[in-house]
Image 1 (tube, one colour):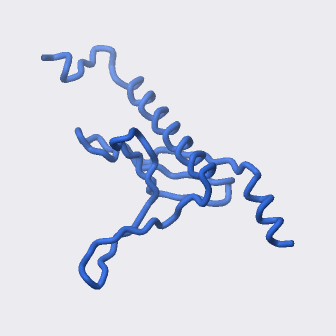
Image 2 (cartoon, rainbow, N blue to C red; image 1 turned 180 degrees about the vertical axis):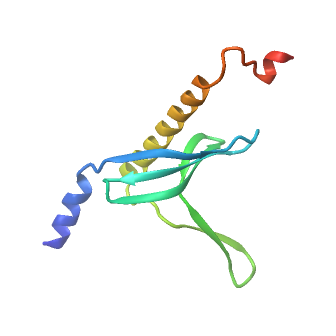
Length: 120
């Protein structure tokens, strides 16, 4: 009986919202921002990185690194989505919040602002 409830619960859509906590302003940085995600008003994950990777933008979950007995560095996610649907919802929420933050920061530039590329 408990298995059936768990399966039904995983099929219902849980609301996911995100906000950008910090933008990274360094040129050529692969990490563009850090976000927090609210899942169903009941669970929050902080320090999700917005990464500009070789295959495009994506949300990278927080992780920790550690050394093995042989000195090799390993990485382990602290929190992660269990289904493709959950991963996609989380990614969409974070990237949507990032796009909104970028649009807001562009709106805050004064009209007479010239980018460094325009000055050349």
